[in-house]
Image 1 (cartoon, rainbow, N blue to C red):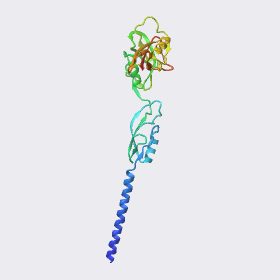
Image 2 (image 1 turned 90 degrees about the vertical axis):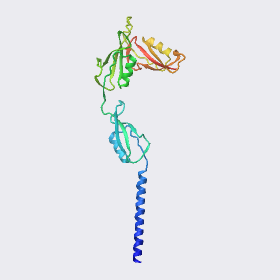
Image 3 (image 1 turned 30 degrees about the vertical axis):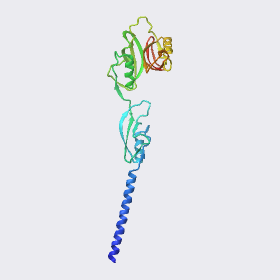
Image 4 (image 1 turned 135 degrees about the horizontal axis):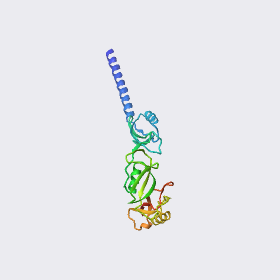
Length: 249
């Protein structure tokens, strides 16, 4: 009888151990399978990101350093997975942050390029178009000089992103002297092409390239949706210069 009692006690103990082990396993497994909503990291600095993700059992990795002038330095610009997606514990959240210093780039070579192409290059590199002057030259609308802070700047010179680049373009060899004096760049967006022509004439400016976006039945009635150079309250160009427009109907 004594042996039987011992056997029963051992069996009961073994069952209890098994039950405890199964419950423990299920608890760990269930917790592991839990889904965690990804928090909003945009605009946070790295120490804040680290603290927040650590509290949630998540990790982070900086994927890239970008630069956006109007965003705080060292703040998160992008995150992957995005906000409110669900992930498992210990998941890595990839982030890109705003650079602490303004990046430096190489000045592009704009010489002899058409003004429209030059402006696209300037803007695509994170630079800004400044003043556009004309000079007497048969190379109409071609860039003759590129300047920064009033001085010529050579191609490949190191400059900071966001710098303002002034241009001098050819006037086509005009000899009538209509290019004297600076005039403001008018805002043509939203006007019909016919109205834009009237405004340009009043400013002593000329229409340049007209690019149609989609089918256009009546060009004069089509709406201007973009212009080069773009309107800016403090941007001036030489009288007689051309403005190129994009229209849509």
